[in-house]
Image (cartoon, rainbow over all chains, first blue to last red; front, side, top):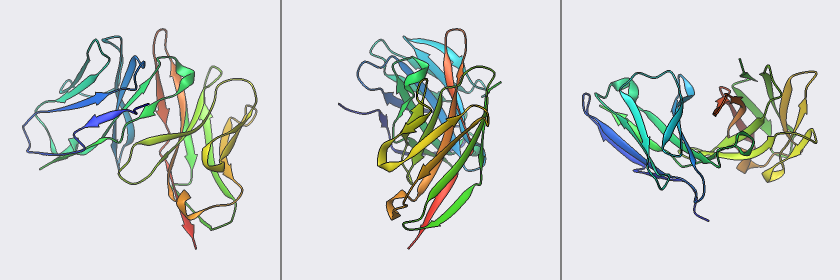
Length: 113
Length: 115
């Protein structure tokens, strides 16, 4: 079966712009989580969506937002980009139950210049 | 609160040697524990997981980990390293909320394999 698909793979944006990243989970998975990965901070949890509802949120500013559609696909938006937002953004899907763990996509590499 | 500590940000072993990557966790409730591997410019791939039951967990690519509650450890091992094992490895613990969960990752250990 198809894995978690993230688009685009690479993105270059200018400071002050906004960006939208997309994630299609594994078929049947209802939970989608987003992580930011940087060399300095490691893997940091952004938020989790389950059945179109955000049920968990990390400690990121309001510039970071997301949503989930009825088909479980999720988008993540970052407004007013800053240089420090440059990172690998990873999406992960799961059935929604803790013990199953997550299946990750290959990520979107965002560079802010 | 749950947390994960990986000892050693970089481990280097010779090809054919034992691989041992250390992970200690902190959890106020029985934890769900995971090991993930990440190759350059890729996402994370689940190597193995511990939920309940047998404390020795076998994963993909010959890796295994043992849950030791008394030591709050979940170290990852592989008897014989292969060049293709060179990657970054992350230990993780599930954090369970009333109706949600998230995974907390350790800071990662970069594994290098010497020919």
